[in-house]
Image (cartoon, rainbow, N blue to C red; front, top):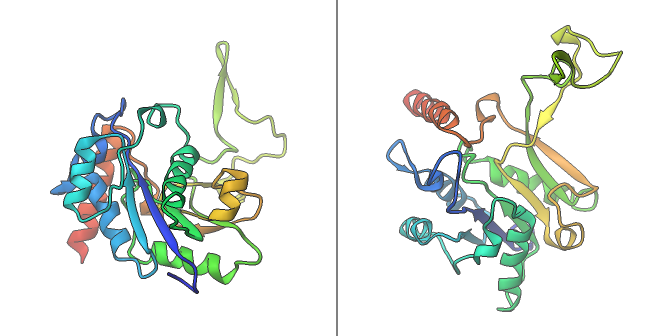
Length: 237
């Protein structure tokens, strides 16, 4: 709880994965990928209820072994390639409302973004509470290395600018900063989420993560990159 507001953290972990099979429980430096997210969330000062929402019995067993709640097995219709995270979250909230357990703030933690620092979740919660009258959500964003100003697309047999912006520059030092929303954490007021059904409501603020955190695991190459970053960070401690 933070400033009298109850917090629920949700880790969505679907069993199916085409890019990297069983990625959510694939061993990463000796423990399942999802455990890196579970353990950081368990160290939060403010999270009142931490759960994993999954359609997979195997993922559920791993989460339970890590002392994380798995209150249900998610219905298969909410575990397809096209199921938006918003529907997964609304399903969780509905489950607890039926049990007369209400929360004020939700935190979505993607297991495919394991490069979190212990302070990230609590810092984001503190920021949204401090600015409660001005913002309804806070998202984690990282600097984009491949800037939109120099991104290209293919038109028939030609390479052309992705954006037809005559004012764009090719000098990196002149670029206006661009950011990508990495899955370190998405934090939202539940009242707003139920109305807008998005983690990017009209009044959204930000938390800029460090460059080394700018990874999401979708393929084996992402996995290998994250594995080596974690190994390097742990060896430096």
